[in-house]
Amino acid sequence: MTMQAAMNHVEKPISQIPPEPVIVRVTEEYHIPGTRHKARFLAEALGFRQVLVFYIMTSVSELANNLFFHTDKGGTITLTPLMRTDNAGIEVMAEDQGPGIADIDLALTDGFSTNRGLGGGLPGIKRLMDEFEIRSKVGMGTRITARKWKVWL
Image 1: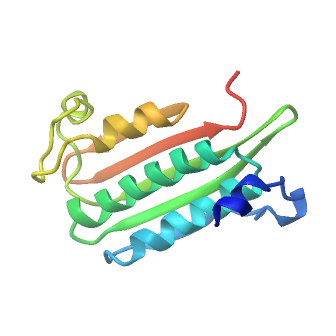
Image 2: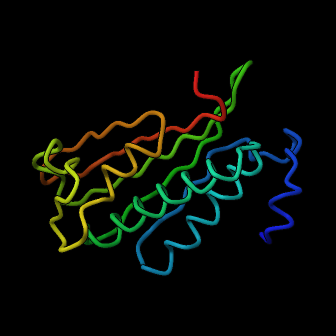
């Protein structure tokens, strides 16, 4: 989207919002930008302000990267539109059947990495999104659910 298009951004009618969750399989590195693009489309269709669209895109990108770089088989990202009478949101769920996270508290510590990265991914997602939850079992896999609302109540 060009800067001019972003400045002229108007909310799309509800009819243009996908009624079903969007499920994206992430098994290759090139799936990461496509997943981020789908998140952007959904967030813009829901009428999120541009800065919040980028929060969602960044979070989705981090989660997709984790699926590719920390698992052998990848996983899925599910993008679900959330509608309330007074608000709209997006739920992002990343699921895998990878090695799991042994110490979730440590994984949420800024600077901690098991893959020689900067260690900002999971803690950054937690800061960018309004709701954040990790469920993981070593040897079984991980499910991370994060939600962002247009209006944080």
